[in-house]
Length: 256
Length: 316
Ligand SMILES: Cc1cc2nc3c(=O)[nH]c(=O)nc-3n(C[C@H](O)[C@H](O)[C@H](O)COP(=O)(O)OP(=O)(O)OC[C@H]3O[C@@H](n4cnc5c(N)ncnc54)[C@H](O)[C@@H]3O)c2cc1C
Image 1: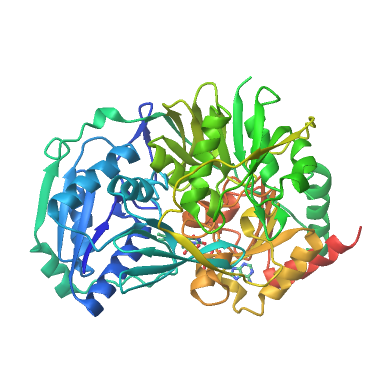
Image 2: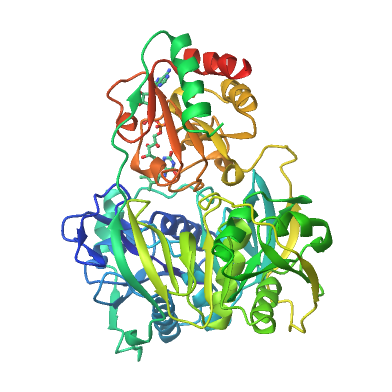
C-alpha cells in the first residue's frame, strides 16, 4: 500500500500566542509540534503498512522549520517525506489542498491519503474535503474506527451523544482521523536517529505551478480572547455556598 | 433583504434546539429572508417551531438516497443556493454540519468557515476561534455566497415569529457520490449530546471511577436539561467514554452554564468550553489554575460539594 499522510506543523496547543500586527502572531517564541490529530493518521498509516506492506510518505505544506516536525513523524515509522515550502503563517485551505495534490501526484499513486480531522491552529476543518474534491476521491472525516481491506475503507464516526455511523468508501480515498482511532506511539531513540537519515524532497509552490495569490478567504484580524479576570470565590459552610451559588445562577446570571 | 439559507438538523425525530440560534444568526434582526432547509421529510411538522424564530420559507428538500449520502446532501444544498438565490448558507457546527458544509464548499470551490461565533452576511465576514480558543479570527470570505457553520449555542436564539410557507424542493442532482452511510449505531441512551446542552457539569480526573459519575448525573437531573462531561484525563483513565470528552481533542461546547468539578483548568480543556456564558469551578486546591479562568469558585471536595449542590437545586 502506498499511503500519504498529510501533517501540519502547528504551535503547541499549550503555547502562548502573542499577536503581532493585524493578522499575525509571534511564531519565533512558541514551540511547534505535529498537529495532534495528524498523529492518529500517522499511527493508522504505519499500522496498515506494518500489516499489509507498502510505504508511508509524510506530506507537509509549511515553512522550512516544519522539517523538524516531519522528522518526528518519520520517527513514528513513516518512510520518507515531501515538504512544500511556503512563507507566511496562514495559507488558504484551497491553496494548501492544491499543493498537497500536486506533491502527491508528482510522487506516486496513493492507495490511501490520511490526515487529521482538522488543524488545531486555524481550526479550518476542510482541507481533507478540498484535497479529495481536487483529486476526485471520496472522503470521510472524523474517523475513530477504521478497517481498510479489499479496495474498501469502512469507517466509523461519532454523530452525537455516543451514537456512531458507519460509512463506506472505495479506496483510494481521503480519511481524516480523530482521537479514539488508536494510541499514537512514542518514537524510541533508535527510531529518532533513523528518521534523521530518511529522505525529504522539497518543493516550492512555484515548483508545483501553484499561485498563492488565488486565495478566496482572507484573515483580516487576529485578536486575543481575553481571559476571565478570576473567580468570585464563595465563602462559608458547604451548605451556605451551594445555596448562594444556586441563588446567583438563578437570580443574577439567570442561567437556570 | 438578502436570502439566507439554514440547514436544519433533526436527530432521532427531534428538532435540535440549537437550530434556533442559527436561524437568529441568519435573519440578522429580520433583515434577511430565511430559508430553512429540511431534509428529513418533516418540513410541515417543524414549520411552526422554525417560523417562531424568523424562518419564513421552509424548504422541504428531497432526493433519492439522500439520507445515506453526505455528498448528495451537499449537492442538494448547492442546488438550493441556485434555486433560491441564497447569498448565505449556515448550519450547525455539529458532526453532520461540519461534514456536509465542507463537502459543499469543496465541491463548489467556495470558501467556508467552520465553527463560527458570529457572521455578517453583508460584509462577508465571520468570527471564529483560532489556536484552541486563545484568539479570535475575523475572516472575509470572498465569494457570492457566504458558507459557514456556527458553534451550537454560540448565538442566543431570539423569538421573532413570521408567517411561513413550505416550499417543495426536489432538485435534479447527479449521482449519490461514493461515500455511503451503511449503518447507524445508536447509543440507545437518552443522554443529551454535550454540544446541544444548555447546561453542562463535568468531572475531571479525581472523579476516580465510572460509577462516581452518578453523583454528576444526579446533579445534572436537578439542574434541568443538563449533560455530563469529562476531561481527557478522566476519559484516558477509562472513567468515561470519549463521546463525553470536552476540549481540544473532544467536543467544543458553548452552554449557558458550565460547572467543572475537579478540573485543573488546562488550556486544552478550556479550548472546548471557553465560550460558555458562566463557568463555575469546584476544586480542592485554592491555587488551581481554573480559579483564574472562571466566574465562580467553590474551594472544596467535589464529593461533598456536588451532592450538596444537588440538594440545594431540588429545593425551590
Ligand atoms: C494535544 C493535547 C490535547 C488535549 N486535549 C484535551 C481535551 O480535549 N480535553 C481535556 O480535558 N484535556 C485535554 N488535554 C489534557 C490536558 O492538558 C490536561 O491534562 C487534562 O485536561 C487534565 O484533566 P483534569 O483537569 O481532569 O485533571 P488534573 O489536571 O489532574 O486536575 C485535577 C484537579 O482536580 C483537583 N481535585 C483533586 N481532587 C479533588 C476533589 N476531590 N474535589 C475537587 N477537586 C479535586 C485538583 O486540585 C486538580 O486541580 C490535552 C492535552 C494535549 C497535549
